[in-house]
Length: 528
Image (tube, rainbow, N blue to C red; front, side, top):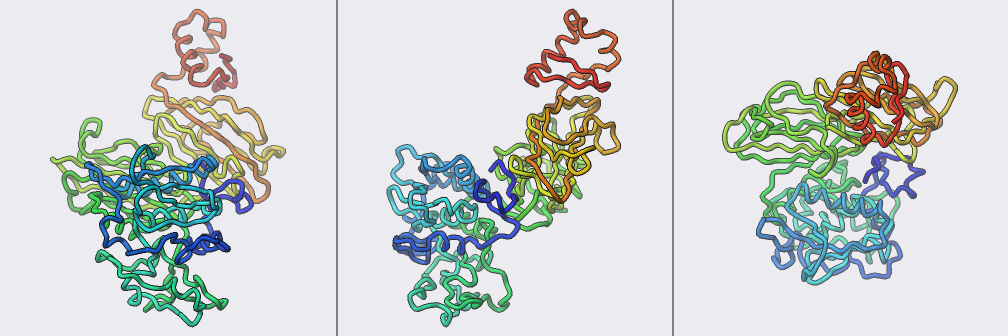
């Protein structure tokens, strides 16, 4: 979704965004939505009797194309709101990024899934059933974890606690399960593909699912009963491995779902292999991702056409670019994503290799680092409200000799005398000691800001009391240089009509900025 994932709980219903700071497990949410359903559901959300887990029957799998991708045609109900469509698409995108599964809009295919909200329940059949099969995702199912849970059913997987070897990993406490619910804990003769049991699977029951006694668990991990089971974030690393093994996906991918960790190229610190093509999806459980390289050595080539690293602000290669193709050696700037998702892509060709890279990731509450030629970004929580007690830094860096043009199209920060509570400051440089371009609060129009150098810093501060919607900003990096202020003052506005140097400059500005005024360093304005 376009909105940040961390929002105030009071806004959850209207925004449709999941509160992930205090997650609930996927299955408890599913049971709550499906409570009172008249549909025959096994194990709480399986619409038809499952035959096998992670299939022994090949005809339960979806077909692979000649390119090696698994094609799943889908129909999307017209009853979904735009935010719900965005969330479903984002949930499917993680499958596509990390596996060879591809969801394609249905045309005339024989088999397809029909994603529908008609029954306002969460359920699916197991595997490809033949024809058009339903995946029910009602309004109460609009969480990434639930969407991925039900789609994973449709790909051929049952609940993790139903594996044939589950008794080696958990104890089912039947004394706390009513007789009518005990069939929900029957194991299946499943194909486990030699992969370990996954307590963190998006397909796992919660530890107290179907408990008839408050405070008593129905599933207890062993040998360590304190191991956490179930989660609310989405696919786990082992969920991804199981999909790739079941469908024999030839893909190098990793999911990094924890608040902090390390990511390295293959074989690091030894040389990475030739013809490598790998992705790492960092999906922290909360806040934004911060990535800092400790080492970087990738074969240099002109325009990085051979080996390179590329980093995206999101879960797919269609997401905005944080760091474009980069190779060679040297320092890579710190990168901060705009949400809890960041994708790293690494590619090598068939010739020279090097030692590769090592990077550390963790979380930041807010802020951003931008190096691309243009970008739109917002304060955290926009357009609902930003958060309390913020100190957010947004650093824009252009290549040497280039300038930054910043347009804040929407601005509303808590108003107070002297902006003593919340405010936005913009600096003509990369740190708060740089010259101040703008400092304000309230709800007003912000003049276009143009840097004199190749960097610009935005600083948003909020206290612990009142919050407003914040700001929406966009910038462009331009190859033409800003004219010195004294030249503009000497020539005067009338001279622009005959001075082609200035006409060319401001005509391009007018196209870029939609006719808004430009604030010069001295405070003069040129109106276009």
